[in-house]
Length: 287
Image (cartoon, rainbow, N blue to C red; front, side, top):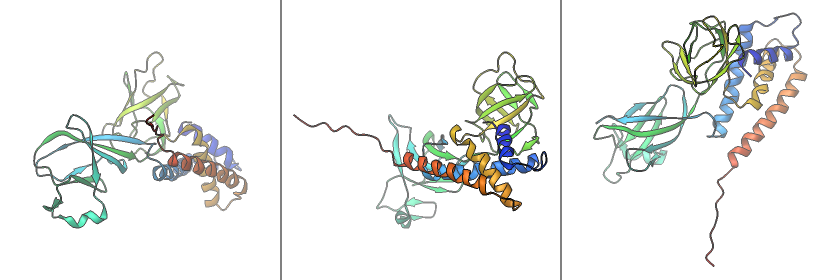
């Protein structure tokens, strides 16, 4: 479901006493808050969802390197400047005593390691030479804000979001919307759905997976963002947002809360099962 469909479902659960009793802005705030909550559950339970990668080039004498602003946590770091990728181990709490100053290893340990520090990663020992594309960092991406509005411009395979969308808010970080889908919900191009492959936060231009083709949207066409959360859990966003809105106004939440708890129980169980899965190994026994 795109964000407009989520808002419609949320309103169905709100049982509004009058049309638009809750404003669109109120609904989108609740939808974005609930999406963030559910995304954090997934991020903590599994490394399979929302995973991305970025490369880092070493600069001689530099130990700290910026990570994408949407990085929630680092999953794996690999050296990729050799014949085969080689995993670089994280620096654990028990190892930190061996580091001084700019995280230079003491003589009794020469192994390369990394330390995650908010929006950056530290490498130890600090690189002594400049190496292009030395590391590949696999990380889990935060989920950006949902929004919808009228396209400011449309190219052969791009769409430009407005500075101020009609509903919701735009996350102002490069590639925030990479991997998500944009749906044309009204106007020219209605019904089209494209995956976003790149997003420029400065120009607000989203590049999509392929050309729009026949019946392409135009400036003024209405779009909506689709959550990256797996489709089967989209109901949780809408029902949870409705529950949050009703609690805020002290309305009766019995029905919607019961439904939400049922959905969330299934959701958490599914995440637990996914987390426990392990690769199967085949053991060969000599005859």
